[in-house]
Length: 91
Picture 1: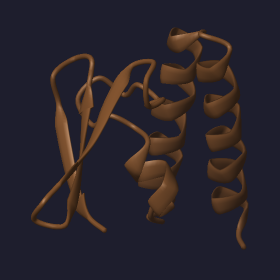
Picture 2 (picture 1 turned 45 degrees about the vertical axis):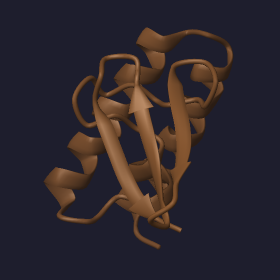
Picture 3 (picture 1 turned 180 degrees about the vertical axis):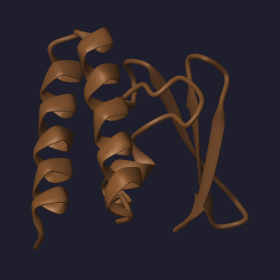
Picture 4 (picture 1 turned 60 degrees about the vertical axis):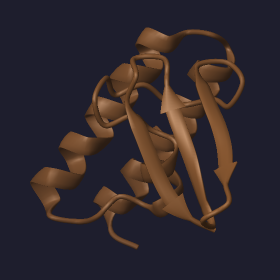
């Protein structure tokens, strides 16, 4: 694991902690910083990080707090952020 991946992993943990403490602005800053690190070092973001962040407003999504999670009959999960952005992925 290289330094950038370790830093992204650490920022993911910090964003999760900040969001669970209801400090959404700080969590948003951690998400933005992690995305910037990934872009500069040309490494991808982990799947868990991509699924729990909003692409539009950079919020760290917590189901039941600032995101709605629904399963659909077509075999996919729909996650909707408070800003209105929607993500879908299969299960």
